[in-house]
Length: 296
Image (cartoon, rainbow, N blue to C red; front, side):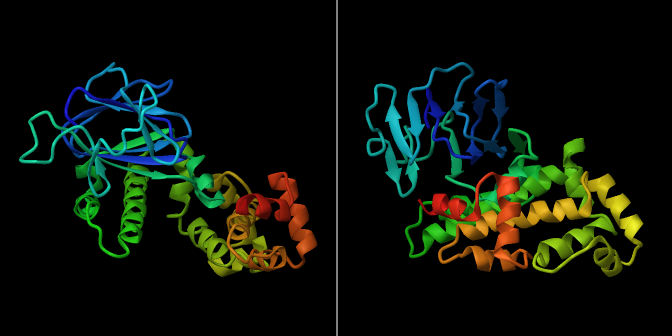
């Protein structure tokens, strides 16, 4: 983008990533204070609220991005083709010759939907997270930059996976340096007692776990596991396990060919009836209705 420019993103995506690879931008979420992002800065932004990126603080938007990557001017004209600069690249700056001194370059990736497991994570995070290239210490932004304008077979898959990895890297960098009490659940995975218990529940949700059997696997008493788990995670082990099973089930039900019976067994319920009762109690609709909505 060559100045002056301002883009309002109101695509209602639940999660977006903005990486500044050249120059400096201002990022402002609706209802939040503006934030300056220098070259190398990366932001994870939760939706569906809108946000603006611009070359200058207070610049009025001239471009709006709507759901489905529909890029329009304020008067409603599509500018997707007129701003196209190459494969997956668009803007107002010419790519002929070296970029001007005020040219800004960004990589923007969006997730049009997230599953129940992803939403479970997002609810524990602040509306936006920002980190720097130095703090991230990862080649992923450079790899994404190198791949984004290629048109090789399977390129979309490569870009999707690189975006996934970059999101994970940003989250990992932020979580390991964050002192927010709300992220204590992350630290619990590193605990010698609670961490292994969480891994057992996550890796084998179909197993008929009890506090006693988890404690035996971890090598502590039942009381010790229950006390430490509640202190670090904020809820008893069996409550956490139920929440995890039903969250996982919500994503499994959305997969092609999934049945209520098969998903019930995958997440540790002996009968579809028991599974349906628990699912409706926690999520407010039956597994069958959830599956229909997911496939609509």
